[in-house]
Length: 368
Image (cartoon, rainbow, N blue to C red; front, side):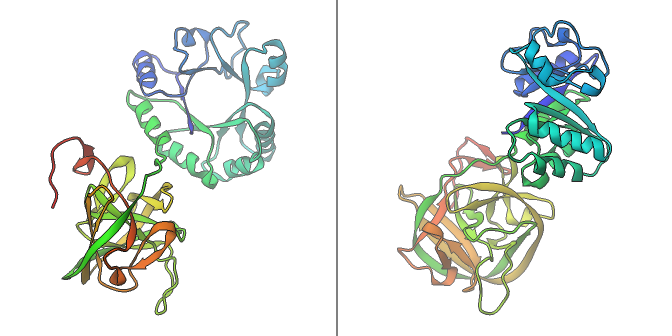
């Protein structure tokens, strides 16, 4: 889980409201320059003292983590730990050149906490620090100017920083930051569905979803005609005799179909566009968010696949009626849509919530 630290050092009028919002959203840390600003905070939040450009106080108050700048404060985290073994200490490094980049790498390898501020907008120095400290046990916190940068920081080198520190400008920023931190998609409990029938249903529009990601051979996206039942459509990672593989693509289904997207929503395939975020899933139910590069909609013959779950729930998927369009079965078995027959097993997902404009909602809704 990524960490979110909220920097309140320069807040004035809105401080109390922002702190209360942060606590409600379960932000991981509150960062202050004065120990008095940390008084009274609940034990559920890490109290971080970071007096940058100021003399270290004699009493750290209720702080649980103290960040120091050895170049300014003249003392290292290791020296402070000897004096205050009950507290955790970290090092602040501002990266402006090769020398300070090496300082950051050394801190990330050795310190319990490293708080890093990168002067330049490039993320290459952060990549270097992450790579240099891959085996380290300490935590790397990177300063983010805003929520958008925080999201980028979490994705650097696929691992990202362990956390970010962001200074909020208004009420709502803490919520937005926590949303980015919680963007990891949960694993899904996939179900073996049994095919009961298939039917050629004539012409219609189907969508190929081209993403900015290479899918694995046992991975695709979940697609279904109804919000409460979806089938795992495999990407074009498996060889075909008449065309090259396109491991970034899923020939997903008719345009009315649902797929899972960001923040627990569903989207129609017809709604997806460049930049949309959708959920990729593998046969074990492991998921990740992937970015859509484009959606290619064309008129093609369609086939309707009807399946049923062990508890009797019905699932439908309408696909392009062609042998090279495939779904996944148990164990990663690749099944051509035109060869599916009653009794075949496919992998699916059975959400329990109804949907309103894509959001899960507990209400009566009948889909046929």
